[in-house]
Length: 482
Ligand SMILES: Cc1cc2nc3c(=O)[nH]c(=O)nc-3n(C[C@H](O)[C@H](O)[C@H](O)COP(=O)(O)OP(=O)(O)OC[C@H]3O[C@@H](n4cnc5c(N)ncnc54)[C@H](O)[C@@H]3O)c2cc1C
Image (cartoon, rainbow, N blue to C red):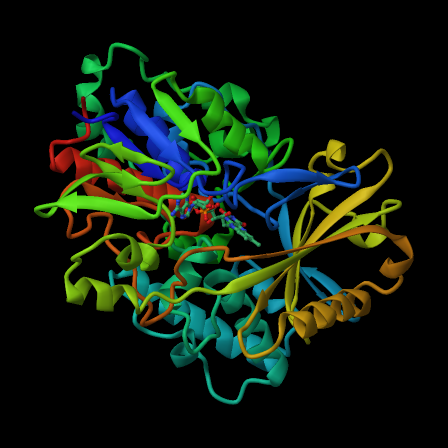
């Protein structure tokens, strides 16, 4: 007899969202997490009085995206989101808003005028193709680039590519840029969840909560969302800049998303930390349990670690599946958190900035959203860099600090805390030939969820996409509801 209906391997945001949704469909769930803490990359902690997140985060597609749908239908407690603000570019002698439409692009003099004109044509071409239904996921950004651009322009585009896909413009797909920069919208229509939720009557223990989101949203973000109810076409958006951005930063830090999920978990979910799953056990092609500190039995297992690790944990996977998983690519990131002894004028904005020279970074002064993240009168900035395997970590960390000192002259005199994090932001990079695994695996009852099972959007939004897909597939397989 099974101990549990479902075992979830991993207590990152994908695992916890899986546990929450599956338990709300009546399943008794066990979550096993190898580290001492739950949350994975979705967490915050205090260093010398400053509350840092695991990487600088912008939470995207909060209006109609997958996280919104999961929050609407499954959460009992909701995080509060602050309006994200703007994206800026910093150079040695300039600080400008990143253009989000053609009109702004014309005056974006961080890049030479000639480059801006030909680039506008290239963007319009890509958007037109995409609007008319062409799939640009196998075409690289490089292929869309006009010839003879200046080195600065190439560096700028390469930086955007690195932060959206983790790879350079030759490996990043044009589709990724359009989606990542919100020119192409992603959404999960409520109807998509209908077939899953129509069985709700069967859930007796915990009713699926009604939409609680609007009263919990920060007022400015709420106003923005209310103003624009129908999404603009991507071309319309490019021309008019009538954007219904719905990006936010969670008040009280990234951990408030984690807390909202944890508080919403019913008592039918059990979590064990410090408990690594070493083996996923199957019999005659069907999953029957996992081996960790002891053997736990269930006929449904959701794996949310790196899918590329599955062949080490599951016996007799088909060779073609194993070979496909080897094609998954990912990137490492370095985040340097700096706690400043006072508020610097350079960071007097809400949003984030990019620096595209030397070692490019993406930086966010997160204490500007919520002053409680830094001691009174102090400021907390996260600088995220992509790091590669060709150079030692030590050298890259050193270069990253040099870049910060060069970009923000005088910052050294104000730094009273630094903290470095080296992490994998997403378990699969969206490159033109990068591979993503399916939510279903060749073993019956064994499913995978996380950022290497869905290529839409990024980060936490992508994790939420993968969970929506998991629910859909389990529903099709008649094993979602208990
Ligand atoms: C620098 C940085 C910047 C980012 N910026 C953004 C952003 O702006 N916006 C955004 O939305 N997202 C962003 N992200 C990404 C986002 O944080 C992650 O994509 C998301 O948290 C991944 O969640 P996950 O559950 O899929 O994976 P993880 O967080 O990796 O969780 C997987 C969990 O499974 C556990 N595990 C693995 N194997 C086993 C095993 N065998 N047994 C037991 N447990 C196991 C791990 O310990 C881990 O806790 C960023 C991440 C970083 C690092």
